[in-house]
Length: 132
Image (tube, rainbow, N blue to C red; front, side, top):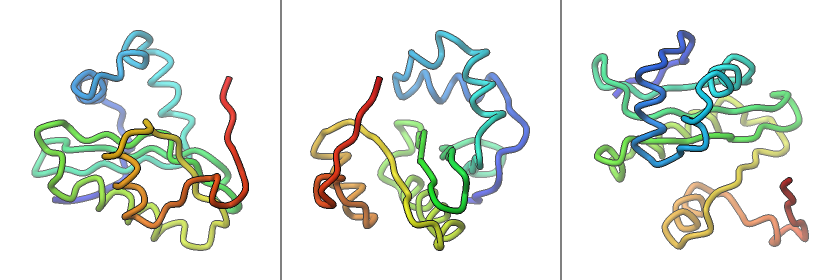
């Protein structure tokens, strides 16, 4: 597996990935998804040869805060270390950033995964999050 910057947006592989994981809110507006990618701080992709395995997309200023907006791995490729490798690469690249945040589904599987990567629930810091 090779992790590299994702610089050339390809509708077919990105829409296929988002569809595969069921993130249809994104696939219903492909133009907005493309614009989101174009305005991201950094996007990394995991490839096996020429085949996309997964992607991680971050937004923020890269100095004081980074928000992991998307991390997706094709379902048949999950639990093979791809998501872990993508997060580790982000944590390495932004090791001096004070806040690295993300929002995720509140399921035992996702909570366990992110805790295993060193993340803590905001409530552990006396914080809460809000969305609109």
